[in-house]
Image (cartoon, rainbow, N blue to C red; front, side, top):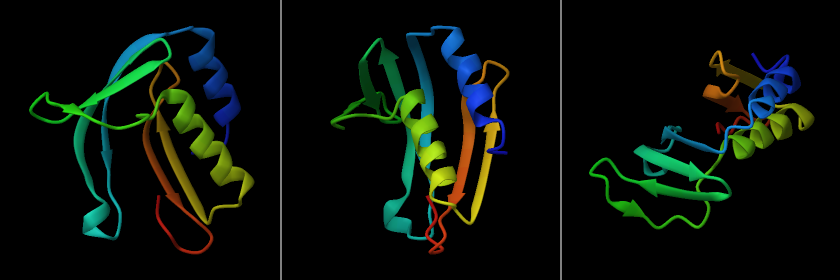
Length: 106
């Protein structure tokens, strides 16, 4: 749930993890907007993404955990119709579902 997001974000930030990687996949009602699993590699302030075949994806700014916390916070501030977030024990979001008040899914 989105409730408690600031506490979970503090837990993540308190660990000062600068180097990590994760799998990114995005779904939505429009099949053209589906993103197949990509690996995002974050090293300090630099983030890069690779496709399923480990080929670089030229993405100006792949999302970092800070990006995801910002998306969740924006959804809360903008009174999204539905926000469901699962978190790891380390405090980072593992699954995010946001349905905006206009019905759009993010």
